[in-house]
Image (cartoon, rainbow, N blue to C red; front, top):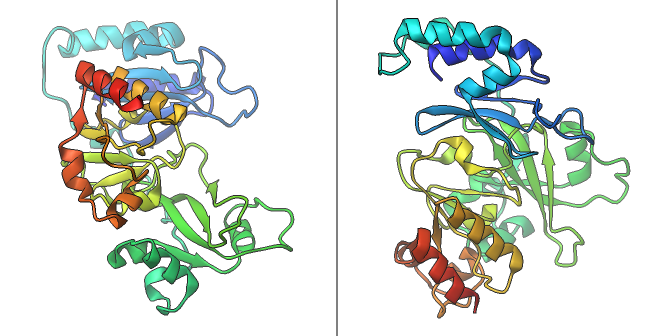
Length: 330
């Protein structure tokens, strides 16, 4: 954020409930327009973030969007006039001027990183059921150091965050860590090894305000970013993140080049609705060709399909994407 925006957001923060700096240029707090979640007083769905050089407010609860200036005018009138006057004096209204060094105004607190204290799958014996399961799915062996084996899932989970009251019926699971961009553990998924498990995946968030995405700590933001549905699918496509069932507004990350790669399920209303929403947002999407019958990247790779090549040939946007989606659903 600009020096002035940062300065006046900090001045206004005293009146914003649960105000928190997520990272440089991204702040969250309870929405002052709708009051945010009525069920959970700790939820913060109001965000101030950067979009194409401008800073905006958006609430993911009520959907209200405001420019930073209008947000201050409506919810921090005691500093708004001073903000406008100082922008005028600095010459930031009506022209471009060099931005001051923010380091003297923004402190960067250091915290010990939280990590997974379990064995990686790569360290297990090749005959171990967890390792055999992952290799059996065709996951590249060089990715196994990003997955962990947990012999007692409920018991271990409670050491991270008290979640289960009854641990008498425990089970082993594969742990898929959800890390922030700087490698801090903010949550995890437990993947069951049992073919008859009632819940194949169990997701636990250690930081409820953190985005529920897999792969943020392995991204190169200068290259095209692929957004897939499941963490295991992301192993088949370099520079990808997995949504893990979340409905985060990806635009809050400020990525310049990204492509949505949804599962190949044209009869799924949930999938087609997500595709329509992404297209309406002006995003790039993959519409799978009709000759491909496999439902996800994992199945496609195991069928011998070069998914990167197919994706590059089937990326659409705008009206063309709408037409392709209409044909794909038939």
